[in-house]
Amino acid sequence: DGLPGSDTYVRSTKGFQNFVYAASGNVDYTTNAVTEDALNSRFAAIVEDKTDPMDKFVIVCHPAQARVISHFGEDVVRTTQESTVWGRSIQTFKTDLGIEADIIWTLNCSKSDLFIIDLNKVELLEFRPWQTATRTFQTDGVDAWRQRVLGSYGMKVVDPLLSHAALAKLTWV
Image (cartoon, rainbow, N blue to C red; front, side):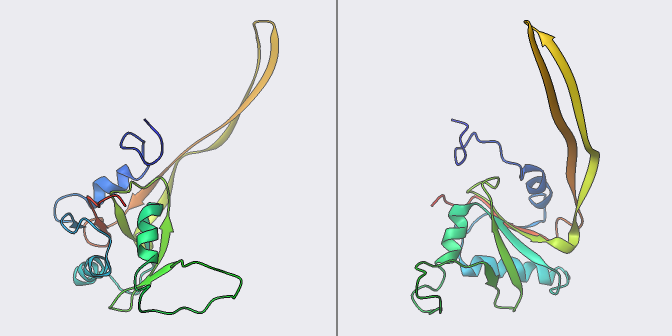
């Protein structure tokens, strides 16, 4: 265990998840699947909470959920592509309200979660700037020179309960 995709794999979206999943957040725990209706309802909730629909939004999810989105409307929508390319990929989701959100998939996001993030309401914070530490060792009769890079960053989340949303407890596909 401990492999990507397993229940014990450490994800790096946990901090953001805690903010968005707080009481009264725009989280759907009941749908259990990524659907157009589920995404549209989360975007509608964000707009109803008075978040500017002109903000830049992204959808962050596991690759398995991104693949589900790529199959939206495949039976009714025809896309034109190069004759030497086969396959289907959707990089942007457009809601029924006209809001567009790029889809970003990452293995750092659990298969059970999908996040809608308002990029105007998040910021990268530097806790400890990047530093290079070097040291020469002479242990066990071996001369060694080692170097490591240290740094610490986090994310500042503004208005987590109203400007962002999530689909939670998604069924693994």
